[in-house]
Length: 90
Length: 301
Image 1 (cartoon, each protein chain N blue to C red):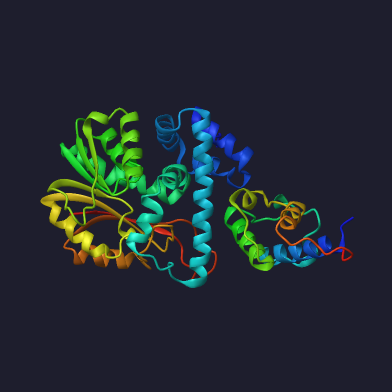
Image 2: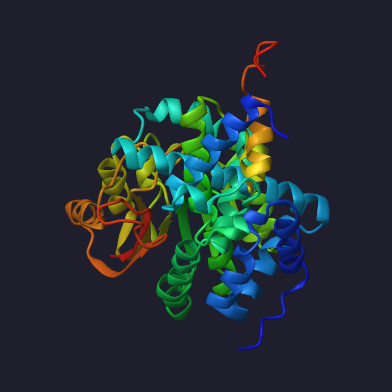
């Protein structure tokens, strides 16, 4: 089960993916992968990565950029960039 | 249609991309489907010359993916801002041409592989072969000059296609000169090729009958000045192959051509006569009005 911070990140990630690919939020689940979304090619992938960078104010290195191909991987990679949650807030 | 059987190294690259960089895993198959055996043969020759063993190919693939990601990031920024970031020629030279590590790891392998993995770059190469190198062969060309050698690919193809021809080439980047020299030599043309570090804006090239200048104009603050130098270097009956990149941000692109027409205008203003041209966009626009990277290639007299 995800903690509150993780859940918040995951919800935002799913919303960003939906926005980039012109979907409704319900179309993007916690386990959605690149194969589930038509049109997720290399160009759209980078548009998604830039949207995530802007949303979370982070910058992904090349290897990270290439690895962000499903919701769990995006969330776990973002967790490595975001400040750790304060004790008691999780 | 039966799937094209890929030669050894092209197949190795396809496997590598699929396993390590799945986002680009379909690129090799897409290109094979578009261009068929001619593409596969050219690509295999190039890989055999420059990245013959698996570790070298792995490094090149890594460099290519970094090159592509960098270009795509710049394209997204360009779409938002409508202009290239301000950068002088001196700054671009310092940041790119004189950075041997960046040139060797990312820029040159990326640029070379892009000619076989990006449809518009391969179309430009094919246009060069059919509309410039072949006429040079038919005319019995004895020598050509290349300004801005980059990876050496265009010199290599001209040397491949025109028996007995000799080449003189110039570039400001030591890394480019070394890479191009290795490329030409590994393809068996080392004795026919002289390449030197020279800024032709300061030391003009000698007169020539056949002139190649690929993807250089957009790297300059004043490309019209270079075109005038090229026109003065070309003999009265000479022929030149000149290209420019339109709406195509890159680390070293500082002059923004917003349309092919802007390139043609500069060509005419320099005194050239356009004989043949190719305008090849990288991909269809994702929405109306968005700029698309486009190559403009011209055979001029």
